[in-house]
Length: 84
Image 1: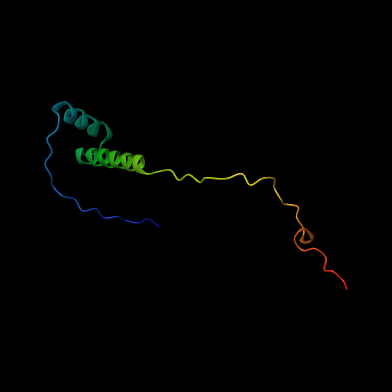
Image 2: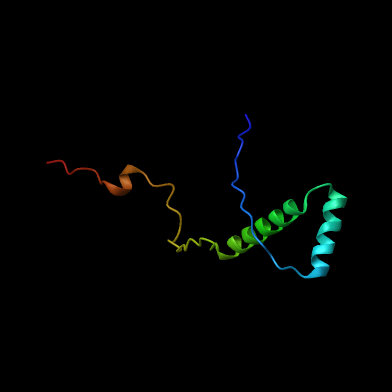
C-alpha cells in the first residue's frame, strides 16, 4: 500500500548565478520536470549527503580472550564429591 506524504510548500526568493539557472532550466526541460523539482531534489540530496558525513560509524572494540573453550564439560567446573 502506498503512503501519500503531503509536503508543505513555501515561497522563497533565491539569488542564483545566471549560468546555473540557465543550466537548471535546460535540464528541467530535458527531464520534463519543473525548475522547482530540480532545486528541491538538489537541495535534498545535498542535505542527505551532509547528514551521512556527520553520522559516525560505530566501532566495537574486541579483546583476545585466549584459546576457545568450547569443549568444556560439567566435570571441568565441578569435581566429584568426596565420599566418606
